[in-house]
Image (tube, rainbow, N blue to C red; front, side, top):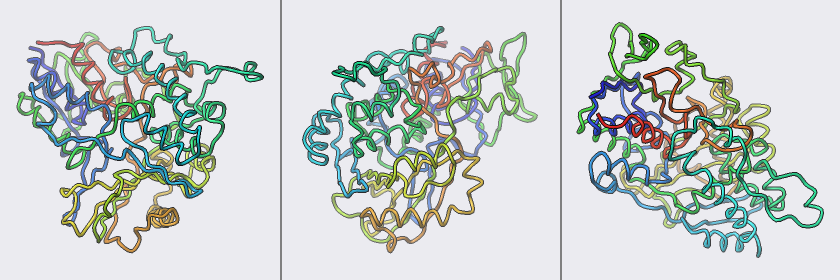
Length: 482
C-alpha cells in the first residue's frame, strides 16, 4: 500500500482518488477550498440551481469506466444520464435557424442542406471524414495513453490533405482551422461560424489552431452529447461519494504551500504548519501554478504558448415556464466573427455581439417550480487578467448580452427576476492537439520530479470534463495496484 497525497479536489483529483483508493492505496486529498468539484461548481439561490462549469458531458465512457472500475456498477446507477435532443440549435446573424440532431452525422448533413442549401452537408461531412482520420491517428496517444516520451511525431498535424484539382494543386498543405474553413468549406459564413464555435469554446483562435482541431466537432457529432440530471455538479457528488466509500480521506480549507522533497524525490506536502507524508504526490491543480507560487519550484514547465482566454457566465433566474420544445443548448452566433476574434484575442475587450451559448435544461431540480426557469449564458472573453481590468463593465455587459439575444429572437429581458455575473476565475484550457510544432500539446502527467504526478485540465490529455477524467485514469493505471 502506497501513501498517496492528492493536491486539489477538482473532478480530476476526485477521479484519481477513487481509482487509487480502489487499487488499495491510502489516499489523502488536500483541497484549498471549502468543497470539492473544482470547475463543477454550483450556485443556489431562491430555489434556483445553476452549474457554474460545463453543463454537458461528452464521452461519458470515461466516467462509465470510472464507475465500473471503482464499484462494478453502471454510471447510470450513480447519476441520471441521458443524451440531449436536439444536440443544439444555432441562430445566425442572417436569420438562419439550424437545428442539429445528436450523434447523427447523416442527420447533421441533412440539417445543413436544409439550412444553407444543397451541397452544404456534403461539404461539411467531407471535412468530418478527414477529421475521423485525425481521431483514429490521435485517439490513443492524445486521449487514452500517456504522452509519448518522444512527442515529436505529434508535432505534425495528421489532418489529411483533401483531393486537389486545378490550381489548388499548387497551394500549400492545409495547416490551420481557418484554412479548412476557407479552402474546404468555401468560406461559407454559416459553415465557418459553426466550425469556429467549437474552437472558440476551448479558447482557440482559428488562425492558429491546427487543422486537426476539426476532431472537436467530429467527436461531438459522432459520439453525442449528454446531460446529467441536476447538472454536472451531480456527477462530482457521485464521484466524491465513491471516494468516501473507498476510504479516501479529505482535508478542506487546506491550501498546499510546499511540495516536500527528500533525496530528489517528492515525499509529501506542507499545508501551512501541517505536513502530510507520502510515497507519491499527485497534483490536480493548474500545473504551472505549482511553479509560479513556489509550491514546486523545480518543476520547470515551459510557459504556455496559447493565448489566455476565459469564459464569462451569466446566471438568469426567470419568471415563466420554459417554452415547450426549447433546445437545451442554443448558440447565438456572433454578428461579425472576425471582429469577435479580434476583440477576444488581439485587442482584448468584452466582445460586442459575440457568440453566446444559451443553456436551458428541462430539469425540475434546477428551478423552484414549473412556473420558473433557470438559464445560463456563457461567452468566451479575453483572459481573467484582462477581464478583471474590464470588471466595472460586467453588469452593463450582461444587459448588452440580453439585448443581443433579443435581436436574435430570444428575448428574456422581461422575465428576469435576478441575475448573477460570474467573470472567469481561470483561463480556458484546451485539449491536446497534434500539429503546429507541438504548440498545443499539454505537459505530460510525469512531472520530471520523481514521485510527483500531474493530472487535470492543464496537463495531458488537456481541457474538458472527459479529458480531465482521462488524465486521472492514465495516471492511476501507470501507478497500478498496491
